[in-house]
Image (cartoon, rainbow, N blue to C red; front, side, top):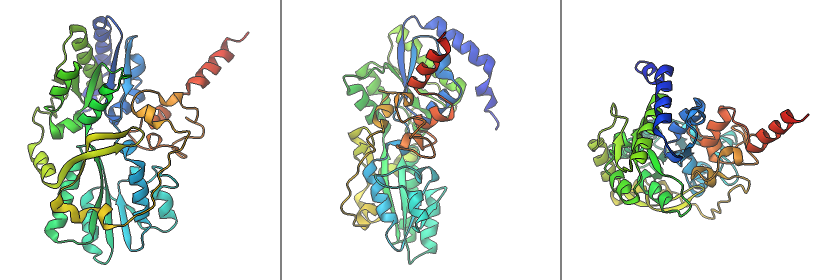
Length: 376
């Protein structure tokens, strides 16, 4: 693709690593918020090439992974309702609920369809006036504007058979919740460039000032991330704590104001539970009262939901950076992309999936292999 090779130049990458080594005089712990950034760091081995003492903490930046278990169970109950067409992006179909997943429901006869945009679901509702069409609206501020536009379009068409099951989450409140944890080790953040392309970075400025943590808005290519880490380490070494923008080719301080106005029209901020983490105040979006008629949770009466997480899954610890996927006893054995126990092993942005696709081995397995090799 055009303009990507420049951000994957190995010569420039080595120069940035050399500069990082010269800049860092003590250990630092930096969290990348976005799951897409995590996959680049792990797939390219960047986290293992950084100078000794600079540790990347992988954050809760996977929207699929943090979608509440109750929402998934509700989605499956709705999808199993006769006369319903349940639509979703493909990465949600294999995310395990308490007892099953959407893909298994489809195999048993439920009308579950993959769409590429929420507008596809609106068009489907217009073509099938006798069916209830539901779209599973998950994600951070990045995907929320498109979902808001779908609701507005359905309203203009006067559709009465289109609803959305909303589970949007917001990044700054999650960062605040992490920093409020007394066990938090994060000293700087790499903020997600695509979120900031929509929302800008004004919301991060009081956070950086209050908690005295640098925030660097960063892209997703190897050089983006290495430069973002260098900018964060430079701030830490100099005792500064401001918001800086590495991703200048795509992000401005005010973001996309048109998208923000659309969000403000369709959604309202609400408290939201994050899977594996718990309730975070003011960290989600729900439909505004004027558009409540498009709320699938209100349209479908679903009772008796008793969400139960798999007891082996340590997704919560992985999502908050308290543990690595390779610390999990089930990683790579009972939990794989084909047989996931938790969402981080399913999503293309999940930390467990990133480690597994990169061939990272469990900590215990590495220790056992070292013991065998060193035995006489």
